[in-house]
Length: 184
Image 1 (spheres, rainbow, N blue to C red):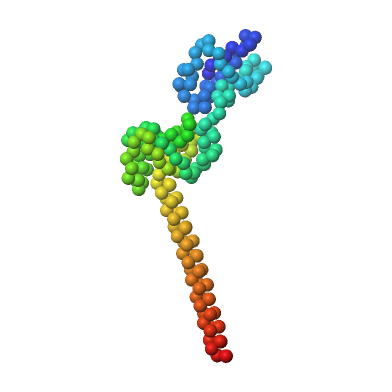
Image 2 (cartoon, rainbow, N blue to C red):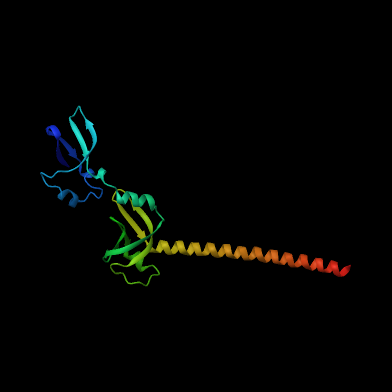
């Protein structure tokens, strides 16, 4: 971690995990000895004369907010920001990325060429909160759409069947009424 000198010559410690939400080395390297930083007191241990501080707690957690609003199975739209032979990295919202495996994309029905800037609708297939990664799937979206189409089709067939039953019933009822009128 890093030590921060507080008023009165007291030092506080910012643990590495409390510097930045993304916990990247880049966040730590940005801090230079002598910098004035703002931190939040997380705990005070008077017996051991320790003060724990946090810097990340003063900013919002984009990743945490995104996964709170987009659970596993949610449909999201992402923009391709980079790709290689294994993964397609996508920007999902400000400061939040996820990735789609290349073989998931290859096995999908999409005929679009992967390129930076391409927007795709995908499904959140898995969320790894510990490593702060979001795994996406195009195949899962296609399967969701197939299930939805099958369900819609089954409901329409049921409606048609019900409508036909009532029509046949109405026809029989009308036929009986017609024959009663003729008999009179």
